[in-house]
Each structure stands twice: as C-alpha cells, then as structure tokens.
Figure (cartoon, rainbow, N blue to C red):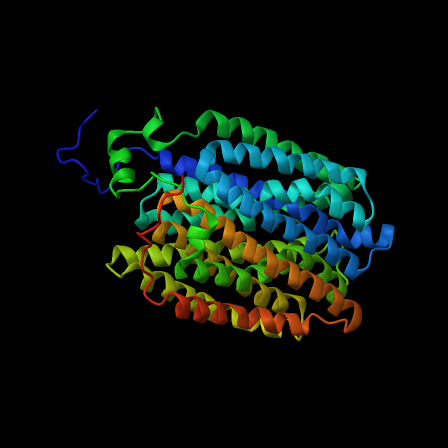
Length: 433
C-alpha cells in the first residue's frame, strides 16, 4: 500500500469507503429500531376498535415507553463510554428484540406498557451507540452528514412500517400479532452483520492507509472517564439537554399519533393512511440529509462550527412553523405538506443538535452526554404524550398541540444559543477513576 508522505496528512479523496459501510449499518439499525417501535402506532386504530382503548390509555403506553426509554438512555450513555459501540449495539438490539416479540402476548394498554419495557430499554441504546460509532469513524467535517444519513433511517422506518404492517395484516389477512413477529426477525440478520463487520478504525482489517489517516487526522482524547456530575458541570451539557427536551416531544408525537390523526380527521384506516405517512416521512428523510449536508458544506467553506450548526438549525426552525395550521388544512394533502415540512425540519434540526457531543466533548464523555440528552428528550416526550391523550379525550382537537410543535424549534434554538452562545469545546473534564 502507498504510505502517506507526511504523518497526519489528510487525503482529499481517501481510498476506501469502509466508513460509509459502517454508516450504512447504522442507517439499517435505525430503520429497524423505528419499525419496531412504530408497529403499535400503526395498529392503534384497529386495536382501539378490538379492545376498547381510550386516548388516555394509549397515552400511557407511549408516555411510559418514553420514560423507560429515557432511563435506558442514561444507562446506555454511561455504558457505551465503557464498552464501546460494537458490544453496546449488540446488547441494545438483543434487548429490544425480546421486548418487541413480547407484545404478541398482551391485548390491554396496561399489558403493552409492561411488554414494551425491554423494547424501550434496548432501543435507548440506538443513538448512543450510533453517535459513538460516528465519532470513531468520521472526522468533524463529515460527522453531521453521517449523522444525517443514519438519522434518515428513522424516516425510512416510518415509511416502511405502515406499508409493511398493512401488507401483513390487511393484505395477507393475518392476525395483528404477525406484524410484530415478522418485523422482529429482521433484527437477527442485522446482528450477524454488525458482529462480522464492525471494528474500531485502528483494528479494521479492510481499512486502507489513506482512509485511516483521514479518519484519525483529528486528534481524539480517548483516555479517561467522565461521570454524570462532571458532565453536568458544563453549560454545553445543559444546552444539549434543553434542546432535546424541547424538540423530542414533537417527533415522538408524530411517530405515535399521526395514524390516529388521519383516522380521526379524515376517516383513514390501516389500508389508506399508509400513503400520507409515506409522503410525510420521505420529506423528513430529505430534511435529515439536507440539514447535515448544509452544515457540513458551511464547515468546508470555512464557517466556524457553532455558526454552521446554528445557521442550519435556524432554517429548519422556520420550516416547522406551518404545522400550526395542519388541523385547518382544507384537504388531507395540504395537511400532509404541513406535517411533512415539520418532520423535515425536525430531522434537519436534530441532525445538527446531535453533533454537539462530537463537536464539543472528548470521546470518553460523549456517551454520558448523549444519555443525558436522551433522558431530557424522553421526559419531554412523556409530558407531551400524557398531555395530548388527556387533551384529545377532553377537547377532542390536535390544534393546541400543533401550535406548540410549530414554535418548539425557534424556542429550542434560542434557549440553546443563550446557554451556549460561543459553542466552545469542553477541554477541562477531570477523569473519573
């Protein structure tokens, strides 16, 4: 192999694309994660009819899922800093697959709350593992794009789920339980691929000299450990947590409640609301990749990191505003447009928000920070789920909640900027033995 003439030199176009294969595996894992968590939401109208569920009961299912998910985020954020993304992702998917299959054993909302506990704990490891892997495999100038690509898996999962569930239940005329069984089997294939293909860059046998130099050109501090108290001392942590607390509830609401929205607002059922959901999440996919590409483009032009991230988030926040009018839309496709713009805005905004751990913290502290952010977002999601369930059972309208969704991103950007205006990296963490 050709050696680099200068130690630490960065090839403009490094030979080899192993890092993008890793990104593809991360993308697939996020797809599977979202399929597994969304099967229940797609089945909600049918299960409501079969078993007499209320909106408040379904709010309990989604709300408690998010609380356990948030606690799982704290656990996996801490764990990934210690065992790394390879072992962490395998443990994560094994747990959530067990919880996914367990849902075939229950029919009540209380039963689903209990069955989904391992699903929530396991799925909480998805983003800490994926973000840690991206931090290992991608330099800063490509990091937001890589995050955007695997984050787009959320939208692909959201697109595939209604089509797949509709085909299994309505097309093949199978019992609703088969939707959980079939989708859970895909996870076993991914686990085998991840075990075979993932290694650290320094240990990967297929990595070229040029690509390894490109990845490792930015010095990384992998030595040390940081506990929750040490990470919480820094304003950068609170900026990240505040952003997650404010925007995550919007995304959770869309994921779990949009099938119910189309059923209530337009009379759509399992056979008909798939196409509107597909359109919405295709727009979200575009937003995820575009948001990551835009800030990466600005960085390559020499714009400083904080300005590039915040500029991308600002444009995404503006894109979310029309969702406030989704309930008043004169037809379903205008509602789809408003909701799709909001989902695109969320994914582009979150792609840049998710870059904060890699941008500002040493690698040994990033998992802990990601866990804290995920917990904050899950607390916000729990509050939103309980509130929306009660709101629909009393007022009967999504309008107040969609107004809050439209304003959430500008508020999140303002709060994160006020807490962390200079976007300064943290360099003084004290290692915890």
